[in-house]
Picture 1 (cartoon, rainbow, N blue to C red):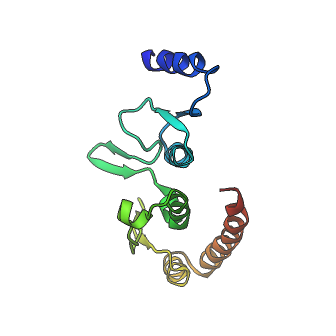
Picture 2 (picture 1 turned 90 degrees about the vertical axis):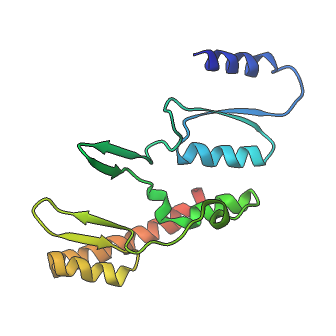
Picture 3 (picture 1 turned 45 degrees about the horizontal axis):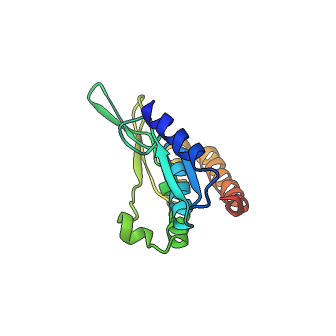
Amino acid sequence: MQTAIYMLNHLLGDMNQTKKPTALIVGSGPGGLASALLLAHSGVDVTILEKEEKVGGRTKLVHKDGYTFDRGPTFFHYPEVIEEIFKAIGRDAHKELGLMPLDPMYRLVFGAGGHIDATSKLDEMTERIRELAGDKNAEGFEKYVLQNRKKLDFSKQCL
């Protein structure tokens, strides 16, 4: 609470003075961190407020009953978004973050038995689904991915 009061006094108290613009970002998930990077690079004095002990928002590990669950980060499946953000601030995402492709990206294990290793290679993933769940599901998966790639291409203008 003291941080919020300090920030309000800081932001409101200096409104009449000509100085560097300020921004207050609530939440340090991927969107908040990306916004902070871009704003700070453009000359804005940025403060981030986060209620959790660590940054990352929903992109964190959850530990329960001896198991570890990775709740994200989905955005790492689209490294070009991270690359563009870092390029906009004059940095190289691969050098800063040590990005490297993983294959398989992850493994899905089914309670009724069986598993599937996820890959970004559409042909290989389609065949893995075909082996696990048959032609109809493989064809549906491929159609779904191709449709969503088109949607992503259209939405990139807004990202």
